[in-house]
Length: 85
Image 1 (cartoon, rainbow, N blue to C red):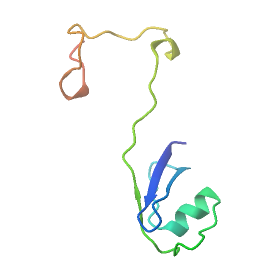
Image 2 (cartoon, rainbow, N blue to C red; image 1 turned 120 degrees about the horizontal axis):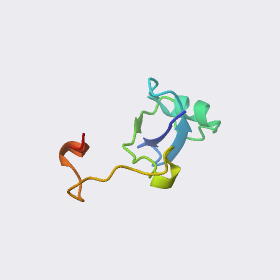
Image 3 (cartoon, rainbow, N blue to C red; image 1 turned 180 degrees about the vertical axis):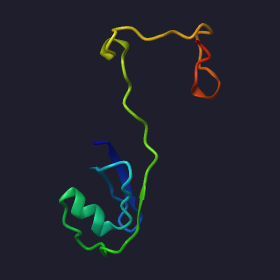
């Protein structure tokens, strides 16, 4: 299951939780329930926002074939998609 970081503006805390991609937590209370945290002094109805976080870096040696295709330009391809066929 993927992990997501959520930030609560009411208390400034960022909490990482795991859940399905189709789920989205909206309040501090929901986030605390998922993370098994006490809400503390923050109201459970305080809104939280999911942060845009980067993914894990995958090394070529962790791929099934042990190699990753190389882009002929040696750089990043437009739109993040390589034109190699």
